[in-house]
Amino acid sequence: MDALFLCKQWLDECRSSHFMCWRYDGEVTRLPTRLIDIGHSSPRLFRTDNHISTIDYATLSHCWGRTKFRTLTNEALDDFQKEIPPEALSKTFRDAIHIARFLGFEYIWIDSLCIIQDNAMDWAVESNMMSHVYKGAQLNIAATSAKDGRGGCFHRREKNWHCQIASKSGHIFGCYPTEFERMSSNRGGMIRNHHNYLQRRAWVLQERYLSRRTLHFAEGQVFWECDQNPASETYRRGYPSKPSARGVLLTDFNLKRRYLSKADWSLIVDQYSRGELTESQDKLVALGGLAKLIADTAHDEYVAGLWRSEIETELCWSCPGYLPGYINHGSRITPYVAPTWSWASISSHVSTAYRDPSTKLFIEVCDIQLESDHVIPPQFVSRFGRITRGVLAIRCDLLCAGLLRSSGRVDRPVRDVKWTFLPYPCDDKLDGTLLEEGKSHPFNVKLDCTTLEEWQDRLLYCLPIREPIYYINNRIDGLLIEPTGREQGQYQRVGYFQVEETKLKKEDRLAFLDMARRETLTTPEGRSNFVTVADNRHGELGYFINLV
Ligand SMILES: [Zn+2]
Picture 1 (tube, rainbow, N blue to C red):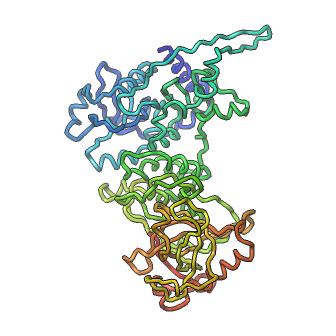
Picture 2: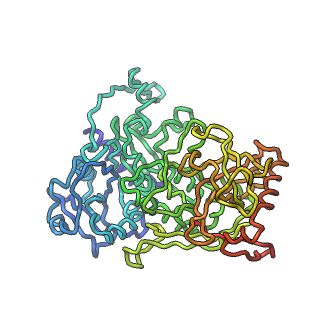
Picture 3: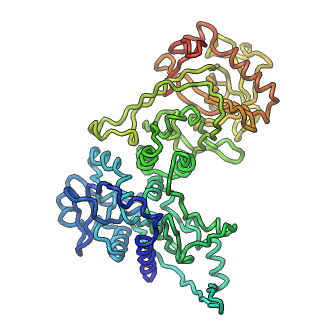
């Protein structure tokens, strides 16, 4: 239990002297609609109406797990306001309440007890307020090593002995037994080695980023995370600041949260897409609070996980499944959570597009239509919540049909896939005689969620998106799309491709572009696949498609 005294010391020091951690102080934040009053012996639900934002409260980050447990429902609302029944308080909740009380809090916010779980409207409104809930809290308590409500915050652990020796000059040296030193370097200081069940939960990412300070109750020890001086029981006064190899390893709890900006979005998506969701329908919602925070400072429009001002570039995300040694186990999430052009439509880890300011674009996104959930009233509809439809109207210079043909074994992860161009008009019932010899080009293909085997010799469309002009590794990248068959000119994304100059000679890259230009739908039959053919603003012919 002496760890809690250390926690109190960290909290007091942070609140009183860490100027870097006062970032939300003074900012008027809305209180959560409900809090749990823990000032009495039996906790009860408390409605915060008419209370101003001066109430200090803690929040809890926890894994729901697969075991069923009692949550707040419409029916239980009155009872919960009198007293939260013991069966709704799991070990994790009881531990969190104990910690919060010890640290001097009279209120705590726990999602399953403060949001009415069987009320779609309440859930939509409250999940939309998530950024306020975590930003407004003085402390976030994370049950980091608990797989579910039975895990709790406190864990049995071996006693680690150490002593301190003071030199004449006043330097203090810590001495640890060999075993403990090994533990602290390989395990003790690094949260990821502590059965970090919480980290696998996608919701937790924004809870960590939005909270001003978090106490992680991990299996081996407690970690303190704040902007100014993250610490752990091993490093009570903070991590070694020298950028030694070991120091770098130890600082994985030093999350960059201050001045979070759009430039951090790639890293956020990278981390977020590795997380797991109990409800895959929450894919965009569980990141909404963080996106809202960035949108407020970036003055950019958030579009289903991407940003409007650079949307053409951002469309070039990929599933890293086809790198040698990796298989992509992802799938397109059903029922619908996001359009195929958004990485949020995929259940697995994704890589965002690299940025290059001097990129030549072959497409222009002219219009974006997003439709949100109709369950909630219009004033609560938000671009940061669930969406039900998303259409990009794209003007493109190049779009050409072709076949994917693997040059190696199709059941293996492949990098080199041949793309074979077809003459027009093209026919779905293709035979080899239609293919022109000598017109195939190696492609680096990353399909979104299927194996190449399924796409072998299938008719797809290649949509080149951009060509970095001064990039050291000249390349062209774009999307593989196919008609939905539902509306004329409507396509869905199936994958991503790259033509790299390191694989081709420069002339070949240019030849690829020439060919793409030549083969872009030049015949009336080919054009009929498009919605419109019109002049662009430079007086050149442009083709318009819808990507859904
Ligand atoms: Zn601090």
